[in-house]
Image 1 (cartoon, rainbow, N blue to C red):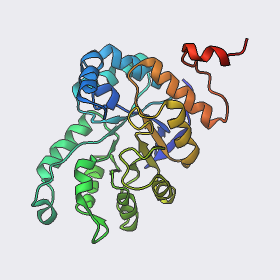
Image 2 (image 1 turned 90 degrees about the vertical axis):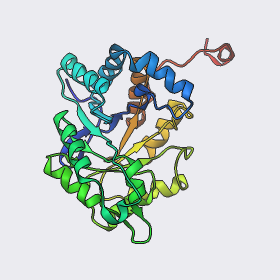
Image 3 (image 1 turned 180 degrees about the horizontal axis):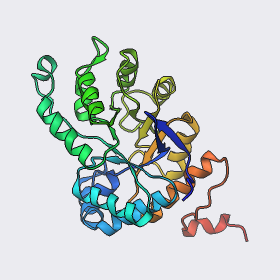
Image 4 (image 1 turned 120 degrees about the vertical axis):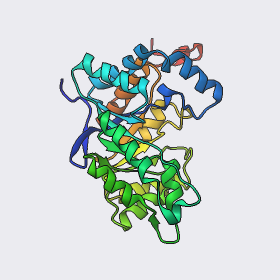
Length: 287
């Protein structure tokens, strides 16, 4: 299968610039508990639905996925998708690590880290980006460093995986570069309305463009608050050629729309997607 979607490189590994997000497959909607429950009942609980979404992405050359890889239902769906498509998927995982009041002075629990990373290696994870629930807590604005992240990177490298940095605080990217932290990519929230972003969008844009390594941007549609046309138009027109966009979908049709819209923006053409119909559109349609 030819790679329809443009690619970039992270630590020598070829990845698709469009990355499969998993929040809308696993039930983290950033909308409401009712929405989370709906996703987990109607989608997460049905592996065939997960596979249908993943297969749509992979057959378009979007073979890179981000999530917590050891989740059984997700890992099983990835394996089935690989069997159906004959293509290996690139796995980016965001494991969490416990942070306590003793962590700044004593460091992280190395036993916990070793067990988690060994599990990740066993399921075939390629890139490890420790979750922001730990990394944001380790950002030190006084020293402009990320505490103990160098230890995490070393342990990731020892297991032949690629280290990355997942943060929600935008200064994390700046501090990682200033301290020459051994990471090959970063995660940054980036969307046109500033949803969940700590500072103004133009500031984050400048940080991304100044980053030493490719940036994986997340929440481009502001967790459903932006329609795909507006959200994807913004990110693809303002990112660098080496940067990535993670976008999730609940159905194969939604995935196909996001892929085609993204290709349209990247190729400077009108995307071949069918617009939604309402009665109010009748007067503007050509006869």
